Length: 165
Image (cartoon, rainbow, N blue to C red; front, top):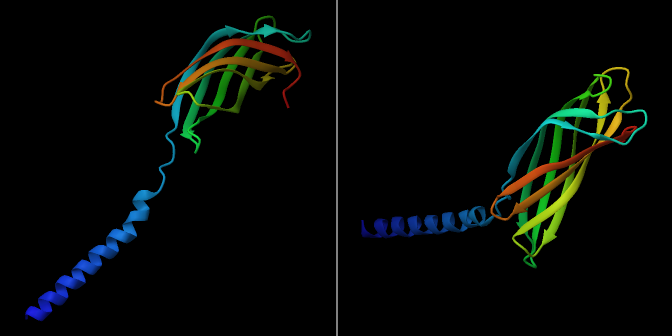
């Protein structure tokens, strides 16, 4: 009886050790970076028109920013940002309707814990009538940090002739 108890105890100890070694790699795997999001609302913002065939357009909708931050082996913080707009607009001259929906990716690396950047988000501003399509360029001012804080604003909106593609 004592021999069976010792064999059972040894078997149990071997099983526990095996479980510990097989579970260690699962818990030691890297956790994917968290994605942070911010929605900025565009409310009746007028574009500056740089197109002789175009017109200023009043824009409404959203610009959604999402970003991740990771540190590399040198200790630099790498910020990956995606800006996506989903906008409707009305021409100030023709009253024509316009749509814009596009996204751009941006990246920055710094030894600091935050990054302040100004970027341009381009999108086709598609006429829903007989007026010509234009290119919309939104200038965005973005500040992100390693703690998950993000601020952003649309600084300006300009239109030019043709499409961005």
